[in-house]
Length: 46
Image (cartoon, rainbow, N blue to C red):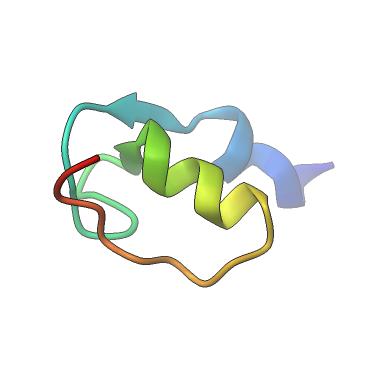
């Protein structure tokens, strides 16, 4: 289960951030892409 700690402690943020951000988070749209199995892509506008 320790392999999931980074997911359990994930922080959702507004706007685009480096993946993962300095405090381990990203925005909800970017997180949704990764959760759906796509490679991380910065999203600057929706």
